[in-house]
Image (cartoon, rainbow, N blue to C red; front, side, top):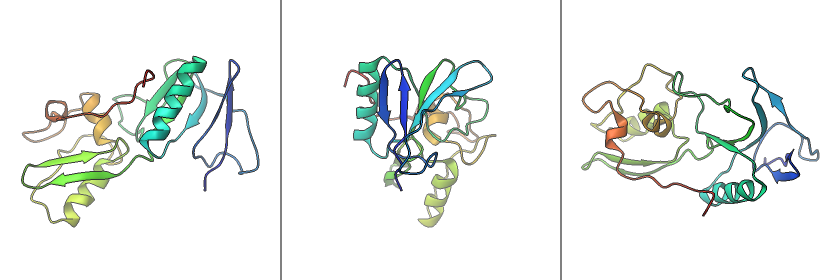
Length: 173
């Protein structure tokens, strides 16, 4: 169920695409103060690339900082807490495995795909391949770990070296 949550900051109002923070008939103003003094001004959880682009476009127009997270469980390599006041762009709903090629040993993932999800995917296909493990949570994001230069085990443990392509969304379109 999608719930509308209105976040107000510097005259900017946005509609959250999905949350369980409030009943559907209520609009709430959200400000969460974190230990570092930064405030989470709201959370937007898009379900597709078009919603990511629209969120970034609207945030840029209103000059509202956005802090992206994927699964938010890559311990030691970042945090769900923004370093400065920002709206959290939660990419966890973007959790599909889009393509897999056993012969070329490639997989195309959305940012919310976890190590656990990738492991299950490979096991279900009785693949001879495996994803290099980390010392962190199996619920951490494969993409975030690679972008943060997370280290894995095995001969291909440095995932950042093996990124073939990235699709990115910018505030400029």
